[in-house]
Image (cartoon, helix red, strand yellow):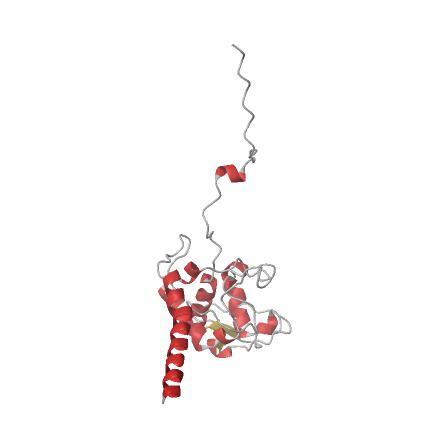
Length: 215
């Protein structure tokens, strides 16, 4: 009985330490984080696109957390600066991801702002990135004889448009691209350096006192 009590007490202490380290302390650190000045809330269309991003499993192959240079060469890969808690202020739930089968997408709206590129890439990734293992999403598009009023057929590389047809994105595809274009975290996260730091640096050595004339 005594051993069971010690085992139970030990398990509870271990659990309490784990909860404190993984839940309570991180919450205390980020509970007062505010949205950076350059970060805008998602529009209704971007939120619909975000829901499509989740539903289509994009989070299983793409992360949204560029890391610092001390952990990985993400900046050299062109994925942008390391993310900070404020970057996720409007993300509920966050989509950090845990796999990088494809590139990090936190700043894909900066790297690739073209709507036509994103739409074509969703329809057939290998038309834009040879050797890509990303699956195509043809069900996000309609194949028609011609685009109807208010619709705009996507421009695909030669050989990828069905003969005699046009490829028209569905509203879901357009919303998903709006969300991808909204993934831009290129605003500064720190206040600008003081003028003294950016201009000519002054000597840190104090000037020697001038000699006092003898009386």
